[in-house]
Length: 456
Image (cartoon, rainbow, N blue to C red; front, side, top):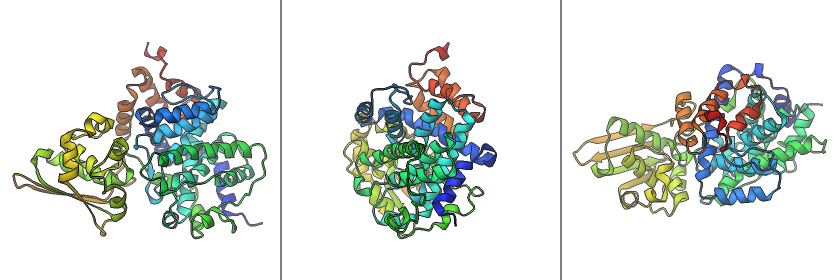
């Protein structure tokens, strides 16, 4: 019998080994993990984090699983909350060709199953690679523009597959069990852009993590499920969510060309689609350190899709609006020459100077000649200086990657308020040499805020 697309992908995920991972893939997975931990620690400052935390705690009363930077919860609760923490303050990864945040779905269940089962760091690294690659392969195989045209949001649609792959790999699934896990994952796929502008878009991510976890754990019980969910003629993912998709892209050069290497990181909080704008602004400021008071005119051009999402919030309301407002983000970068969560504190986004600049000075326009996250910023200063900067590839993209040192700095920035200094450095070291870590439990212990012994 001919192997189906889902079965081919399942066989890949089930059989993946450490030796199969090229050195560059291993290192990118480590970069993604450390960045994810930084985002999760930062996520405790999210406006809705308390609500999601209480909800997660209500799912079960056990406390066997570690919440990154927080109190233990049940396996389900910690999976859900960790997924939310990673995306809570809008600074996690992005697979740009599918507008999908991958780590909030894949990392939480992988970490927690590895913790529960006392798996090694090497086992975790392989599971993460499997989860990242499966998520992105399903995404590109869907013909994402057609998925987006129907209003679907990638993380909740593609993420459950990657989460199931990571858990299944840690549990030593056969190819058959992995294929059934994918069938169960796909049966829970969902999430649309009707949620845009509300925190519900972030719930898509953490729900995707929980969906993948449940799919894998149910498949492990030999639960009967379709082994061809992706291309099934009646309700398959590529039929129901797209136009039939491009299933050949799921398996083309699988294991030779790694789509996970296209997962980009964000050096700054704010929406993924305006990272090109952010990059162009910082490139300009590093050459000409001007401030808002020095500007006569400020024009920013972005693609129409980016403009529609982020170019219409000149008069933003509160924190969530500020995080996705191109006008506010540009004003804050120009005035402060940095962009951290500090720029999204209420006392900062309510500053009259910044509100006035966002509403009256920053002019954002749609430019049909630009695509993806390209951006052009143009300034005329009061002294007559004219400045133009263009960004084709934002910092953190595959074409303009962050260094490990930059990611470590991001981690330290958001870890220092929740973890002891010695724990912070040990976490960085553990991730850098993940394949040599004897037990993931060691890493998870360091991620608990009540750890004080390590500081001695």
